[in-house]
Length: 385
Image (cartoon, rainbow, N blue to C red):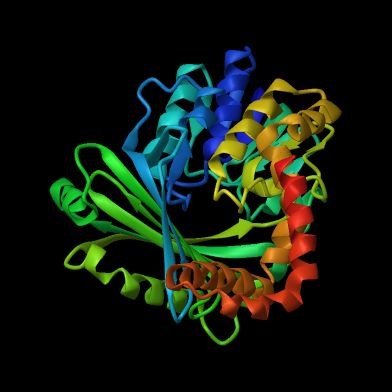
């Protein structure tokens, strides 16, 4: 059987790539190894409307809640600081299972053929090998996620080192719609999202999202900082600190995934007829916790530049979300070091604690780190443009 385009992986980037290539008239096959799109994905998840609407008609978007407030928490063993932000952009919480199925259905409606429960085991020339047999394709788009075995087998990227990866763990707890609203002080479809940056018990980033009938919580733990404490123990500790929010509810879902903190352009995004998108080339913005937006953009751009490898890589670098990820890599690498992570969390907590008490003398301790802070500030200025 022959297709113009075979897309491997029906996650966000894969389905958008299939949707756009089908709309452009290419005979498109979308292959998913899970029983349905989204079944293999792990994400909180919160999305920006503007990230989606640029590439996909959002009519019928299966959102859970509209995020009206984002709570940012910096926490140490001794104290914590909480900030509340009213988002300027329209934010939604979504279930990845529902969201990914919705995107895949749009690809099918545009004419793409979706095949699930099928694993692609190799790409040889113009042939895509699956456990059910092979198909021919003029172009192959690999949207296979962070564990990108096909991309690695083709020499387009290497395996991530521990210092280049974060392990994400997520749990979803069921409760009634009224109970979700009561516990978070919400009304109707209004939602809330939390970001937690903490160095206790080890450096990690946590999240809490409100859904219609459940609450999602999780942690991201830099693998290089895991010393004597398992990531699931960090999740246990985080959940314990939120016990009142999930008390009496039942665990619906538990999942884990590797989140890449390195990739394109040191990983190849294109090689002749093979294109790579999303997590497979590390398109996650750890500074804004945004992986879905860049993934969707990359899927769209890959399908827009079929037959133009250099054009795809150039388009990625011109895409603001992707460009920011590339510019921030050096800063992120610095901030993920355990000593720097702890330093800034404690600095923020001590700064607000000193301000509230009227005694900033504790900040004298940080004077010895001014050069490192100046270097990080310079890197940060490069990220903002």
